[in-house]
Amino acid sequence: MRKIWIAILAVAVFACGENHDFVTESGVEVACIRKGEGGAFIKDSVLLLNLKITTETGQVLIENEGQPMPLLFNPEMAAGHLQDVLNKMTVGDSVYFQTSAENLFQETYKAPLPDSIAADSKVNISLSAIDQMSREAYGAYQMEQQQKMMSGQIEKDAKIIEEYLAENGIDARQGEDGLRYVITQDGNGTFADKGDKVFVNYVGRVINGEYFDTNMEDVAKEKGIWTQQRADYGYNEFDVTIGQRRVIQGWEQGIPLIPEGGKGTLYIPSSLGYGPRGSGAKIPPNSVLVFDVEVLKIEKQ
Image (cartoon, rainbow, N blue to C red; front, side, top):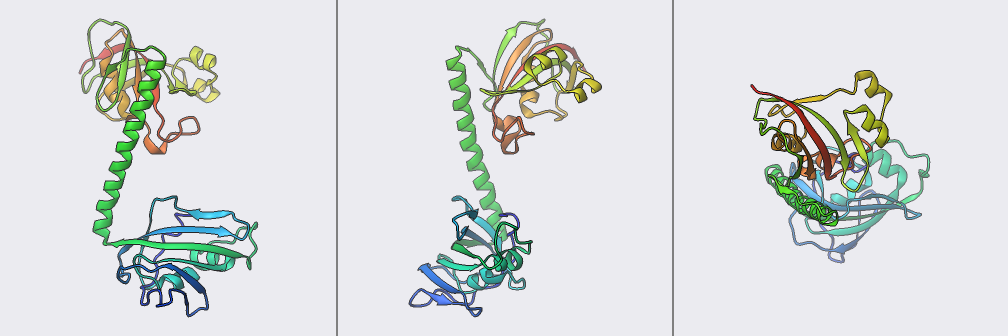
């Protein structure tokens, strides 16, 4: 729902009135909870909004959970009563109003009304205009927010790995970018470099969680992750060429740390794994991964 409403709305020409409350031209009665001190909305700017929409029964339809919602602002596209209210707001305003579910879904979202919601039922809308910025400024803002989120997640992952290692009495070496590893079997002293093809056996799991993949059929059956599709394809030794970026970054950095003929365990933070997207049902977003890897052979380039 949140993605549906990255709509283009009309320019604001009025602010909350002197008595704070106001009525739109379409007859929507609006309680102006807080009068802002910012200016009028500008065409093609990006508004940062806080938005919460609930049904009469209290069901939450939208709530951006403290992360401001971006909205590209343009006077040429209609969006129902929600647009009418925005037309009378300025930066910093915070308002509350009601509209019909039919108006919200059909006029604002341009989407069919859910069967579970009556067309004439009321929805409650709380809307705050937090800030306004140019597209260029918003791009920089996005990058800053992403870096903050990544930094916070790196710290979380490091703590998860450290606690796991301590609880299990594991003395792990420090790799780059938060990667930790243990050599469980010494090899012949030959390590892979960029461009080398490495043949491995492996089994992967989410730290403190389920096993999700292996190239070894007996292990797959033991861990309950055997599939007929994989069996038809073949449970064979797996090869990866270092530097081609066809595997997660945790493997790109971790496999060269294990010598040919050796075995090791890689503790991979989510930033070097599948990140906030995760991968399938068994690897949730921001998962710390553990791989037991045996380096069978290295073909030097």
